[in-house]
Length: 158
Image (cartoon, rainbow, N blue to C red):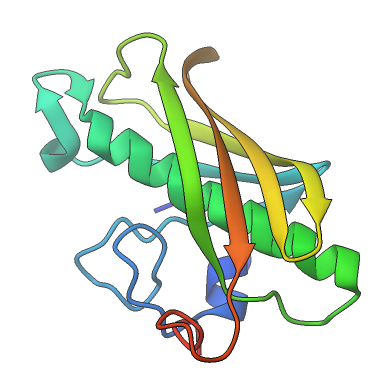
């Protein structure tokens, strides 16, 4: 749903993922497309009518999903970069919080940015922001952790 060309990190590293927010293989999901940028990842998202909470405004759950999934991928890529691996570890959300700063309007492209604040061992703390028409509508911060063999999510990106 992003307007950027090229291959997103989701399409490159998890093409068969069925995640509602970021899974390229989920035809009914949001299918976000995140791309590397200076200091992290960025994406654009064009909401559909069914993503509204009420006429003209985007649902807070959709906003939370955009920030959560984009933040998770920001963490995965930061962990990959720190380790020097060619593939990101499968990461899950340990915690995240968002602040809805103003209503997010429907009918415009949303811009989401993620930046790793810290990377320590198997975890990364990430900040996220969502803007519409140059105005910040939501911000967030999350802790994302790489999972190991035996965790139910370990092979979810394969």
